[in-house]
Length: 300
Image 1 (cartoon, one colour):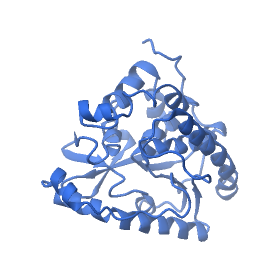
Image 2 (spheres, helix red, strand yellow):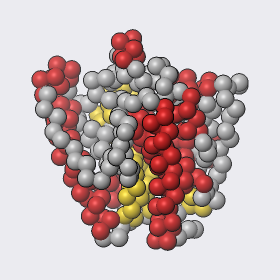
Image 3 (cartoon, rainbow, N blue to C red):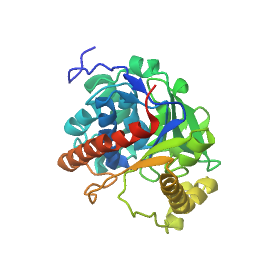
């Protein structure tokens, strides 16, 4: 099949960190390209994690890392994030979604920038992506071996409330996994991991504030009271999980990688230059963090 850009073939990592080491990923829309830069540093060193868990943009950007496609996420920023088919108000008017889900998750990997599904499938790690069940208000976790090349579960995890349509997948009505598990550290701990590399997309000191427009939520989601409840409580969950991450760092059980410079890009930013700068910052800071990670965990 012919692609717009020369395909980048995936590569297997040269080393996998010891069992019990987890990579925990926050979302953040296009701000999540910071995380993609961090992954680039991990690929530079040929390092892979045995366990990766993410929501929203965190899980979406991890796909290219797991497939070992060095530079693929950067190509997406360089060539397509400024395209109105990627993110725009026009999408919202035409398709009831700010992000062009069909374009992002199907057209780009199938026509423009090759995604190496075969290499992704061969990677012998555990990868989980989470989306909120609109009926129960709880996170549904989808394992790597349950994903298909259509990656519906990852698409669901990236579907932002009120600016994206509900995704119906495997009998669930799903939306953004960042609502119920914005920093999925608790799930990682419950799965038995003892050391966590946590990639955040907000600066140090950020705290989530309460969403105060309950009437608006009721207008959109009156059929889903548990979803409304989860969205109203999201700030409490985020701040609790953030506190837990920082406590783990103080106990020597985690490393946090997050932007050091004041953020210039927002959740739905389509400014290529801003996002490339954020990506490059992530690349630099991921490389700096990796030395500490390897000193703590070693390789196998």
